[in-house]
Length: 243
Image (tube, rainbow, N blue to C red; front, side):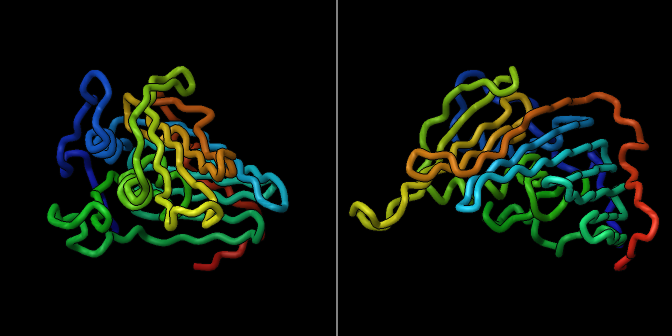
């Protein structure tokens, strides 16, 4: 059956982190509930990466007003739109001119068991988001913190500023396999969290002191009204419906 989750069915969240610098455990636990600290949300993420073929830029626009959500991902003139009313998920791909419509399904039971390790658990949420991509990572950083950042050597937390918002930055360096020059490139993540909400604001991938990929929030608006019409996908004539 489709899932209908309300705030009342979820455990309460911590409204603010303690004063001063938090511990890593406090920061990651706070970030795990980031999505629930904003009633409505507009977020723009720009993802720049550098490869042998040059630099690429992908933009992700996120709208959230639960149970509705919309995510638009664009690279150049190609774009894809994902939208939900909490029960039904619709997608449109402009490159292939195809669309899908399907009910949102609950994850298998038991994945929210408190005894499961953080790397395997599935935290209950207010509603669906795309399974892959920056939208889920930035608004629901729990698995990124548990499976990616904690797999490296974590550094100290530093206070920072992003888009005039108080933020906290931490680095996670990949442990070296062999203590020998040339075994593999020195790699680390530099990640910035919004101090007020726990939302991810920036993720940098650094190889040998050179940023090779950076996804960062370039615009954020919290708790402002969003017209219901903005969650509707307008599809052109002749679209092919896959299912």
